[in-house]
Image 1: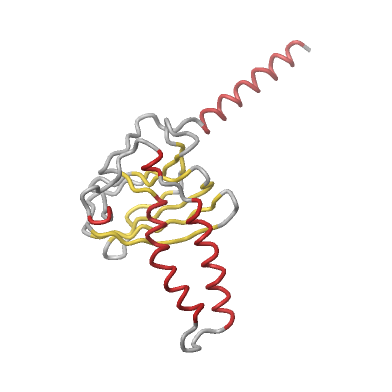
Image 2: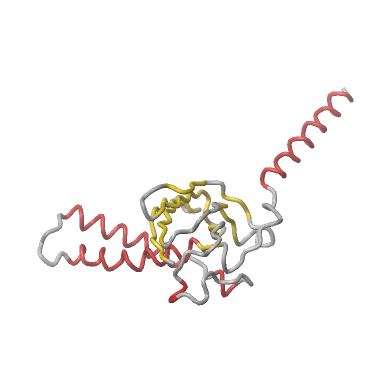
Amino acid sequence: MKTKITLLLLLFLGLSSCIKDYLGDGPDNVKLSEENHLYAGDLFIEFTLGEIPKLKDIIANPNGSYSDNEIQAAKNELQVLNSQLAIIPNMYSALDIPRPCPNAPGGKCVPSRLEYIVFPSYIQEALVRIISENSQTKNTSNELQPLLGYKSDLQFIRIPVENVESALTIEIIWKDSSGDLISFKVSRKN
């Protein structure tokens, strides 16, 4: 009986240490700089600010060129985008993290050593795909990891981009804690 209890304790300790290693605190060598990351929240805001006027135009249906189904779909999408916008935290005002591309107009650029896409903690799953100027996929990843030191606030996907060209498209698909699935693309130029 003592042997069974001892074995069960060892098994439990072994499993819990594996779970700890799996969940962990993320790699400890991630250092965000102006040149190596973009914030998915900023990319989403950029996408949404371009998308909202298009949706409002469909809803207004100026020439009667949209069906009732298209208008309803636009209303639903507008509602989801607005609800997502309301919960995107401004990580640069809340945390001591350098903003990428501080000298670029509107901060819109492709950092010279892009390696990380940073996400707020309420994102449960994410996929990032980097597409080159000539429509070739340069990198894809869905390995969301907590960012050490910001465990409850931030997480990231490491997606190194070698030879940053003059323009890239960043495609992101995420599922948040409410179960909403959001998909968007943003093109950036240097």
